[in-house]
Image (cartoon, rainbow, N blue to C red; front, side):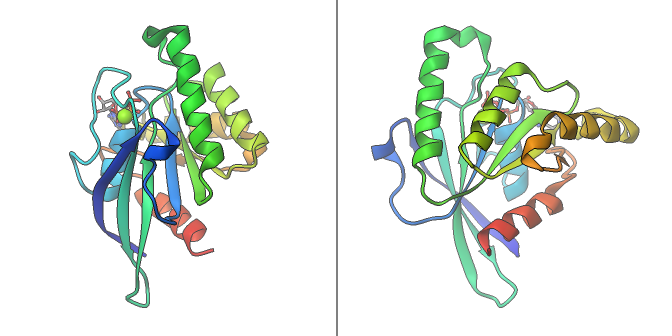
Length: 202
Ligand code: GTP
Ligand code: MG
């Protein structure tokens, strides 16, 4: 299972703007600035595919990318990656946050072929209340979650281990062993590709 191509497909804020077709989907959710767009670029090995910024709140729409993977038998499989706007960004204010949750919830509950939601947590920090609330909501709605601990290059190897355990314990309800990831160094990419392969070929 090798990702051989990635292309931007569409952006949406409402269901009628979601791309048509019966694609399987993998989505990425997390606080603003946690590294969702960077992770998508590194997973696709395509820098500049998703817009990245040091300023939180960069991604404001639901962005769909089509990926093509080559399978062991030389067959090809197309599927979607979905980059979601970040949550918990203070400057956007209450009204905006409510709107955020409305259109993200709408997407998460609507999408019939959503196979996996990767929830990103900054490995340097203890998960925040918003992370825990979002996680609870996902598991209550029976959505399959994979925790990604991002920016692993910012910590030493022993700190990565320690923080991964903290994060695993906070999210123990989903039985998801966090994958430590670095978009800069490519750490965790093989593990994530494997998790994606498993859900798509199930
Ligand atoms: P929003 O779209 O605002 O929700 O943010 P996002 O989650 O998409 O984050 P984005 O990918 O735009 O990255 C935010 C900042 O973190 C950028 O300055 C990135 O360069 C940096 N960053 C992301 N991933 C990593 C990583 O693995 N390592 C390091 N060192 N920096 C990272
Ligand atoms: Mg983004």
